[in-house]
Image 1: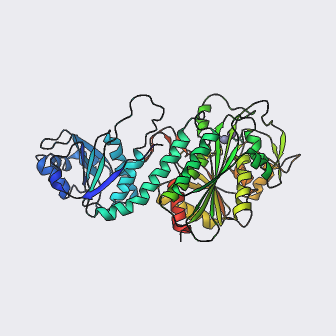
Image 2: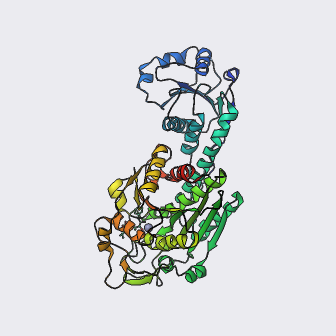
Image 3: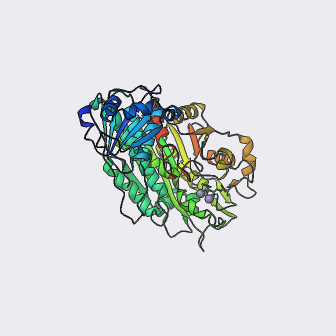
Length: 488
Ligand code: BES
Ligand code: MN
Ligand code: ZN
């Protein structure tokens, strides 16, 4: 898997600046004031830094921006990177600064003079996250990864607060790798094997195979995968770091590839459906983070892994299938498959674990892209408390989410002539009817939220903390939600 940069925190030693190679990073306050580290670089570098901090160019920089001063006189380093940042930056500003640094690093060793800056840990997190590069399938020689050293006032303290952030970076990287991986590599078998490997971290991982799923009556899930040569699976990951209380449940849509099935998608852009397991990817990334930071909470992550393919054995439009809950579903469109997978996994999660709350994640509808674009995931919930807690956690992590409505009025749209419900609701309110469908499989007394991440899981342009491709959206927000609300 792609691993985040390893970052060292050391005592400040300004005598090392003259001979440091690679890049030296200094922070300059918005008013142009230099700290001890910057002054040292300024003195060694014949006052070039001071001239820059007085310039229009510096004035024009936004907080968190970086300017590269190449081949400075008086220093052995290749460049001095100047970052404009206050002494007490917000965590978003600090992460942005770290991200700029990752983009400027270009494989070089980096020495960060952060003796006067609070939140060096957040700068390190931004650097780690934006340093992600999915190069598993590039045959050219792998790019060099330079060593990153932060000089800080209290290295032990910073290292301690940076440790859970390293766990976050690793969880986000795991999600991104899974989501970026093409479907011929990340088959249902391969996905399950990668999850099973997390047993090394102290997670319990259980894999339910097709015969088990048949016995449980998960026919809506099985109906999605039956056209594929890859076997359908449900994987249960448990982290028991809390007391005896029931767990919080995370449920993910893991469609390793979505052709649409017999309701085949058009060719243009179909390759993007390799990310249709993004919900399951987020669940896996959160579980990894919880295990790495030994969270004091009980959390179960359950993912439904299937491939939606057309074949002689595939589900037909018009087929009627019985869910594990017992309700029957008329499958009008085999491309509305995510809700069929989630229906059974949600029901199973409640029957087996009686969770204190439940959040599912899914790249569920194209309609959520029409509504919210790539900036926000759609949040649907039967609980104001859970919904507010999630929105708060997401805002704190800079992950966009926007609450959308649920209401029984929409149920009219998914009534079926011949079965209990049908799996599509027509042209309008596509994301809401999908959420309404899911709610049929949620018990009234279970606080539940559904996150439609079709727009946020993977994007074509870089974002603040990720290059183009999978973002890992949601791992940080869910990790924080669990830390704030469910940790003892
Ligand atoms: N996986 C897709 C949704 C999707 C679309 C994810 C774009 C990411 C980007 C989902 O299974 C799907 O095909 N949904 C259909 C539902 C429709 C048939 C009711 C859609 O959105 O078109
Ligand atoms: Mn589909
Ligand atoms: Zn899908």
